[in-house]
Image 1 (cartoon, rainbow, N blue to C red):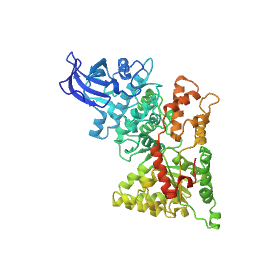
Image 2: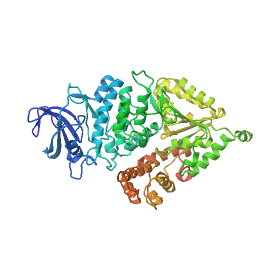
Image 3: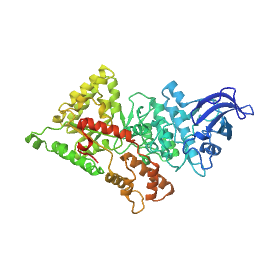
Image 4: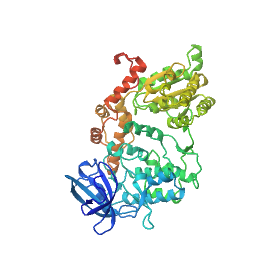
Length: 587
């Protein structure tokens, strides 16, 4: 912090330094009139892209001048100060005696359903006010426990929404990772993970906050030690599954509130509440929220699994490109699974499973789902994070039960994502129980194909898997899923643009040439970002808009990271053979 108790910042005396980072600092100060207020300092030279308006004024200051709602900061003064050879913006707002919601959750872990509902309603009222500000609404983009200040005084609003560093005008250009990584990832909607701020993204964050208050945990477990892009991809995969509801008794929690949370946190932006007012109406019981047509939208306990019916979907017809990979899977796996009589006649071994490995964002989990549809098998998806949490508690019986259930429903495909977390090398096992659980997994994998159970595993880190898992008779096929080549990238652009309002004659081949090194999720981001910008002005998506967005975007995987995956491939497939000696598989 630049200032300590007793220092002066312009005309304001510092009473207590509160918080700070390399961009901004917040203090409790005494005003010239003798009152108490909050003062925020923003270093003009360190503001992130998007924080400053074209006029050079921080959006936070401009927005606060226009805020008129009890749940929002009350503007007292602002301006610029030359301090220590640098220029700072300052913003003074009315003081609120309280604690952040983050501090409250640390202290009490959970909050009653009644109070959680009231906090969410107050927060939605504040968001409705900023979303509808004239002339242009503003999205907060960083709603989380640390941005909610609970008022502990006897008068005034129950809370105040603070921390406006990431606020943007509706329809603003997407933010970069340096902005996104300042907010807990669990609270970022899928489109926000791509940098796009939206009204529905703020609504998503309130849904996560409501879940956090009621259950004391966030809906998805995020992990560190990886790049932002890698963590974001893992989070997107986790969100494809039914929302997990912990099996703990919660007073006054009913299915109605759970359905509301599910709708607020829908991955599809169009499936969420479209306004804060609509979300609030549901919480007050004025709007009925029905469960999804497929049945219960939430799963109880762990592991979280999703079963797909036999014959559903279009199988490999839904997979863009990857012709060689699809032919390989048909000829070496699916044909054998479908025609067991011929396989027995020719004494062909029934395959147990395959491992899809390679860089993140290339569609390994999607391929597994479409493989199940193509084969006509039941498909059971197992979240690795849930199964890993069972491992921690030493419940080896759960692993056996999972395979027993699959055998009873045979033919069945078991799909394990993040396989390296389920069967890590026992050489580096952190405990004897972890090694025992890997042994249990090995036992269940032995010749499970003869029982009608086929295992598809996917991973970004094949080098971390226990070598015994990858031997013949357990995982029979190792298939590398690389980055899409130019024809596949062109097909991906055509696929993601299909059905959207576009100008005639968009050249997808040219877009593919300009997106070398992009994975499927990168291309999705580019198309989604342009679509949102076009929708804000009710325009057609044009070639120029796509080219401009590509010029701003970078591949999520660096050349160094890709080199690491190629090294993995060499070790697993060729034992160090030269790249030219390897057969290309996939794109």
